[in-house]
Image (tube, rainbow, N blue to C red):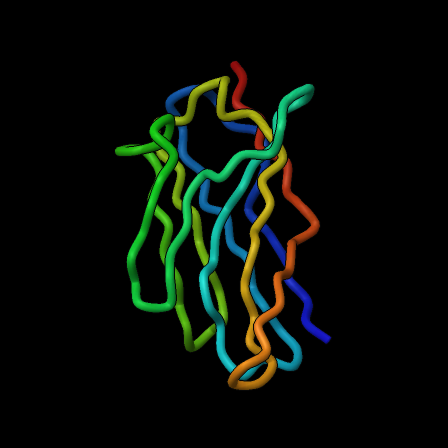
Length: 120
C-alpha cells in the first residue's frame, strides 16, 4: 500500500505565499512523475505543475512565474511553493504521484487534498 499525505494549505491574503508538501510512504520502489492539481468550486480539476523523475518541470500558464514545484527523492516528497497568490488560486489542491512498487509496475495515486483560500 502507498499513502500520500498533504500539508501546508490554509488561508492567506492576496499577494501572500504558501508552501504545500506531499509525502509518499509505503511500498515504494521509486517515484515517477509527481504533480499538483487543483479544483475550484464548480470547475474541473486542472493540472497546476508537474515534475518528472529526471527533474523536468511544467506549469499551467496561470501560475508560471509565481509557483515552483520541487521534489526531494530521498524524502519521497513533492513541494509546491506558491507566491504572489491571487483570489483565483483558491481551490482544493491535490498531489498526484506515479509510484513504482517494482521496476515495471507503475500506479497512480492521489492525495486527500488540501484547501487553499486566498482572501482579504
